[in-house]
Length: 274
Image (tube, rainbow, N blue to C red; front, top):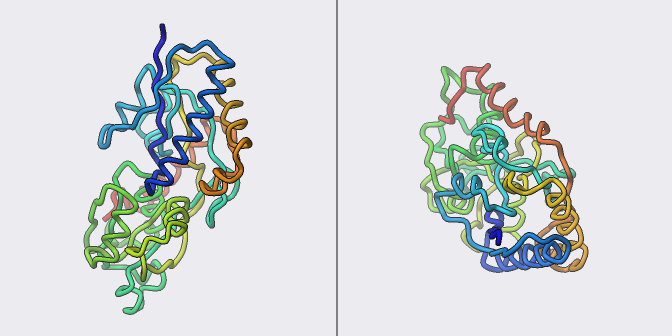
């Protein structure tokens, strides 16, 4: 019997959000199980630090990735693009999103109220393979960089929440946060993010895609897409808590914009966030 695994690792910003995402996933897969004979399905947790290998699993029924590994690191060659969520958050337009550019309270008081005024500050970034934290910020900074440099240093934090903590602790002064993550964290009223100031947003790009292994057939992929729509509609309150309005069915080529961000920065000679 075929066995499948599924997880939604990208927007579990609090334990409560993780539970709501797991509930949505469970309901979606229950609909899939009734509509298609796929065999056993296990809802698991994506291993921290090993997401690329997780996303390339042959038995992956559903997960969520970032547009950067999907387009720039070859993941598109290994997976089905199932859908792109549509969120209700400042910075989102349909299935597109932006990054919120933020500075620490101390940097704000010293006059860092525009991106250009952030020259020479200490940046924080969740990861080098992140569109929202790295690629979008690199694209925004590139026209302002001099000799391939803009920031005094870059601290790699591992997550957007950790980037915000770095700003509040004084370990860094500026960063870019996925606008959906930023909105969900604000909803949770977490005190450690008090004092962080928004100074702008990056250009928009297609949101974080839901993916499945290419071992899944095309008809089964369509069943999965329909199941996501049905599960979302079945619980409006859960959708509200997740700021989730729907799912768009984009073509994979829509994510070429992610590469355009990188290419534009390279034209300015700014190939690394620094």
